[in-house]
Image (tube, one colour):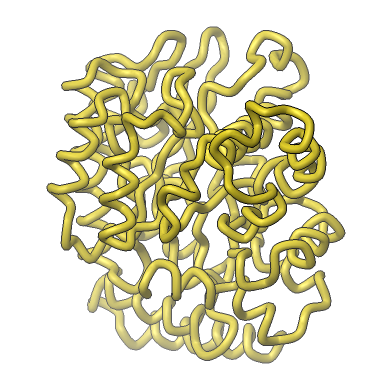
Length: 366
């Protein structure tokens, strides 16, 4: 691997000297070939993106309660939550700098997705407008760098009819390979039948559904020690997954592909407890046709565990063909070098390559 990496750096350096004025787009595509040459091509399916237009729209029109974007320094915008201020890394929206960082990570492609606050907090019409703005930016990013970026569409789920309209507007767009849903919609669950037409459409269009936590459970108790992220995010994913199972969504839509972030939260580790609940509680077996264990492979999982032993357990539980590279780009709780944890698992080359990019390429049609 070391020789291959060194060769890649040398090739990219020579390319920079030779191409000169040919532009960032050509350099970016060269980087994609270096990062993704042959087996081991890396595709990051948990990589966040803010378009500059989306950030400005939130800054000008206001965000959810307690959330604002400060654009007083255009080159260094920041998220403001109460008295806290978090600068936004410019590579969220500066694609040239992002590509350079991807090359340093050995990542060929990002599946770009919006993160908190998403758009479901807004009045329906504004949520739909923000979704269109963001999704159009995904299309622009893919058009400029088709080998480097594909998009995970954001939908205004606070009004399912508008969400379906936006999905129809995007139909046929090569840039859009997935839809990105919050783990709850203003406290409502994804097993709500109001979303069934959306799932039916995703299933028909072979669009992957990816989840991401927002508005997590137990917010008051999770305020200290950054627990809202450390515990709240993975447990909100677990609650969402359990609702999809017990709510019968996976049975109703057997071809729907769903990706759980943060390695599935606690689902892979609490499935036995959930399955016990099916035996002793009628409300837990009313709609789910199978034991919980049988649903684990209905989901896909990213690699974000921060512990090789935990990730090794997950791979053993669900199979290497259900796990995909993720970095949580570019949060402090993510991986700066997302390939490293996969390399530490001691997997056979074929299994490693599935996790690095083969599964994502198949699932996203790359």
